[in-house]
Image (cartoon, rainbow, N blue to C red):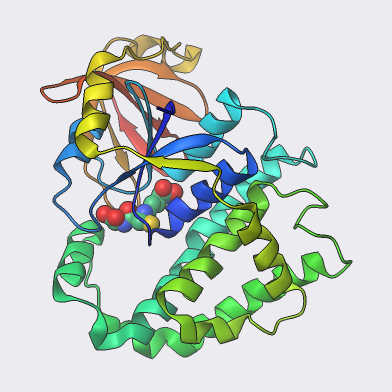
Length: 302
Ligand SMILES: N[C@@H](CCC(=O)N[C@@H](CS)C(=O)NCC(=O)O)C(=O)O
């Protein structure tokens, strides 16, 4: 069985970002399929309350948020790198573009386009997730604006590819390609009519095909119960706490996303750096696990 257990669902765009990274790295991994809406009892047993997708599990280490999953994949499996041109810092920063601006535009275009086809239970779940009305009619009204936003973002991709390169930063694919790709994949798979936004933009369709052709690595499947059993019988990696957090080492803290899905996760601080925070928790079903979060987009309450 592969070490990498990836909690995901097929239609999840942030999961697709990671699946492409797994493809670039040609890794073996197992998909642990999670529900699209709450409840997700096995997932929250592992995370302590964090409900978003994707989450990566390696033994009893649980990595929340695609930003940190990318970082951890690169740390554990450095070759082939996700930074073929050495543009590491900028490539990580590029997620602020894809995960926020591009994603929000894609969501409005898809759900505004689907209109009253969006199921009621999905709407109420996403309202609980965001704490705001999830209103396909309002999204429909925003579609012209969001399409204009999306055209501008896509034009930047086209510009970047205009010199004939195969991928966004050169001849090898990297994180920037996964970032640029996954929202367009989301539009194409969730609301195909809106693919007209990019299917004749110079260079973009060929680049999308090249990224798709990378594939997802060597994929298998593990059940949610098996994933819990793996966590229960594994020991988490030892971490180190950064000097700026030393006063809180071994103390109880809570960590929560600062945008949506803000359910706080409580544990004891066992690791940190400028990029991550790790908390240890004991769970009746998952045993002793360490849950890791990125710093960007997450608040830590000491
Ligand atoms: N910043 C997060 C965003 C993740 C996110 O928004 N995921 C969506 C699915 S693609 C989600 O969790 N939706 C609610 C749910 O699935 O319960 C990340 O990069 O992982």
